[in-house]
Amino acid sequence: MSKKGFTLVELMIVVAIIGILAAIAIPNFVEMQYRAKRAELPANVDGIKTAEMGYDAAFDTFIAAAANPAAPSGKAPTAWVVTGGFQTLGWQPDGQVRGSYTVTTVDAATTPGGDFVVTGQGDIDGDGVLSSYTATKSINTTFNNNNDTY
Image (cartoon, rainbow, N blue to C red; front, side):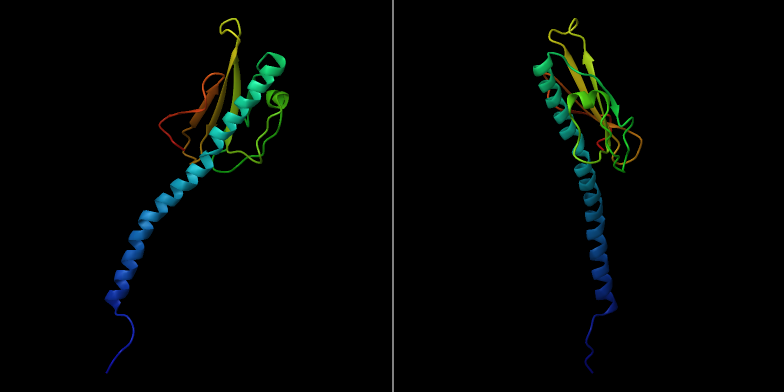
């Protein structure tokens, strides 16, 4: 008598293989999601730097901007409200943001020609530890490792 189908052992092997593949794929997938969400920070910091440089070219001064939003929102994106220094610069992000952005200025008396520091901070993984990017007039956007990459 000939039986068609799979034995229990064959099915268990398939389930084990699927489990091993899932154990490898799921953490990689989550990490890729974090990387994609974190990509907002350097892009926006670079955009703010460009706006500051343009403003300086037109008005011969840099503009400070208070943290906007006041704190990084973590996993959920937050609506951007254009206020203060960012409104003066004419810069706003495309859509909602997960990070918080600040611009501090350096007095021209201490630094010839003045300077500024753009800071973008985020907590994409929601662990309470912020990752940070900065840029200045002469330094492009850099990642400041605060022992947290997301």
